[in-house]
Image: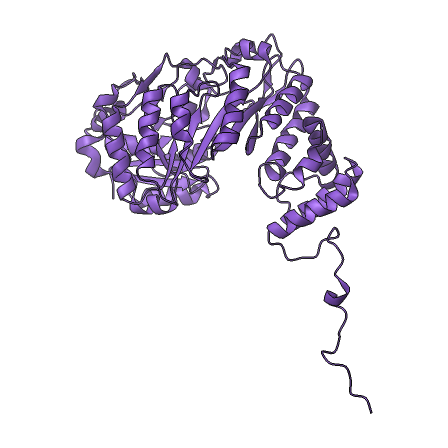
Length: 499
């Protein structure tokens, strides 16, 4: 039983909500009356409601995000139907802007907009005392970070054993990229580093080894970045894995020296490129030095063991298909291990909306609000690009086609992979649920029909990758069995005796 239930629907079980743990930690005297319950978006809403009501809460707070608003709307509607007496409080980025037009906001009792770490506690105290505020929407000011209670003790031992551990050394972002809600921040605000590292030490001692930093600009303050990396180098073991978001054109020598000391499989950098087109960068208020970015990629690939996850966004205002092709090809040449090809989304409140009229930006009215067409990319083209992104994740990012992928991409990676994507969709009408052995067969056929790959090289590449995946079937591109190993021929171990 809990008077206050903190809940959200995560995209996958492995994700654990840092926001709920902040709210719980900062309930202070109400903490013993609260419980965290996390669900996943593929659970049935009616089952989620049943689990929530098992706790018989008086207040339920939901974290609302672009990936869970549709399912959570149904959960809230059911809760208000079954138990209208329960106070439903919503928070999170999806309800912090353009709130009045949203059905989930209409269903709920109260909305906390902005960083609700402290405001939520005050609201709960009033609701439990029967003193509901008159205003439905409460605007939270940015809290002083030194007044916040640490959330990390609210990761359970089961969380540490089985889930990603999200942490933050700072909040906010000084950059103004208009597709991102962080562009509304004036700067970045750091947590006190000594206290933060003490929290990390406690997590480490409890067994945490996979730390995902949610800071937008980990390498903004070099001294702080070095202290954090040095802290983990002192605790390095084979299970440690760290994920950071990195500004691509800011990698001074002091930081490089520390990065180079990490072994393989311990450090991942997520590097947002988004576009290499200068006019588009300017249009969306993104500053990025292409020369320094390329030099830093080259250094990371040749002098460190870092796994690089780079991001591109397709459908930005002012970018045509040729510009997307150039950006993709430039990024391929920089050789990151992964390229996340994303389709532009209109996050509620983000300044990207100012380009809607001039560039005829039409977005889906349904979450996650993907761009459907622009003045330079029609609907059909953006559908092709959406499939491109999905197939790229399946083939380019999976790590299963190390030998085959260079043959497929050739000397014009974007155009050749777009041709492959078109061929795959024409053949299968699918972008999901393609079995791996079937995907190998499809790539074998497409490599010949759509891309004119050299047959022997394609067969050798596919067969090598196929064996690396541990698949057991005998594919059509497999080399023939040697005569002595032909499973259809039975030979005696000794010749028959002669008379």
